[in-house]
Length: 250
Image 1: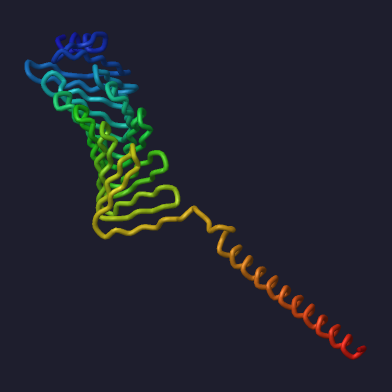
Image 2: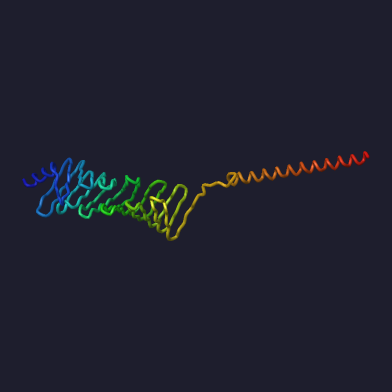
């Protein structure tokens, strides 16, 4: 009887724990109540909302003392309500005390405010520090930047990205590679360290057009100069002939 009363209260009420209100909803729920430990599993359109985060998934589990741990599996999606960071992944674990979220499997993290899209297989996001640590198959896009690497740290507040392990940043037609890359997403300043490589495309064309056009212009100028020389030579020959003719007449 105690279990059913507990489930009823969880389904239709909200709990205030550590001065934080938690709301639950799901198609079905099962759980156990204890003096110092509680476990509740929700399935089907499951969702949980605290004052700082919203999580939806096929299955959610609340565990630990005073529901300090939240885990989710299957079509996980959510939002950090304080910093407007949206995410999706295959599975999630969240500690309400440390405010640390661990996202795993096809992770997508979107900084809506700064239009920064992050992707990886594992992302650890610290809500308090507003820092995301990305691992495995990393990708990050922002403005004209397309970044990739094996490990990266995104500092949301500072708008700073640090990448290592086959680090690469593409900016339009320019490509930069190094062991370690730091990119200021606000100023677009980039710092590279270790085995630096890159390609930069000069968008400015030489005066008069491309090299081919310049070459054609040079050839045309040479032909014109040649024609002018021949013309001048012809005029000189004509003048000499006229002078000779005049002399014979005299």
